Image (cartoon, rainbow, N blue to C red):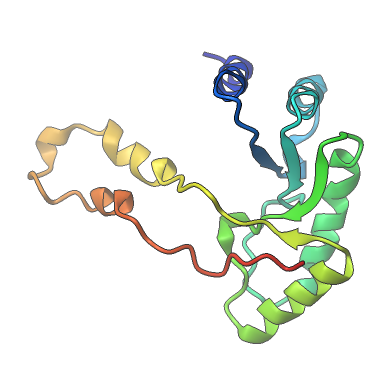
Length: 162
């Protein structure tokens, strides 16, 4: 399937089961008519569109002002869609390595009326995809660390701000 076909299949499955979802968009990927068609389809189906920053950069906590500028750069690309909400999801769920950076970022988001979006599903498929595609004959049974990714684990640092 093409990306657009996969997207349509996902939306069809959500519709079939009467589920509303939220997608967090990195602005650097909003660049053509396909992006506008996909975002319109999500919005028209009343799925939430949230902000994932323009660059999808890892936030170490060192420069909260730069991350806010990156978030605000993304907003005009998304705010035209009726289902856009001022929700922000940190790329890689990284809220910063220092308490000061994390707290400053939370304050800046709150000042701009953004909420820190909760993580409600675990998408470990990105972590186990590559090992799962490699030949299993080369690995002894039980040695695959990627299986650990399937075990429940807490998502740290994902709290709502508002």
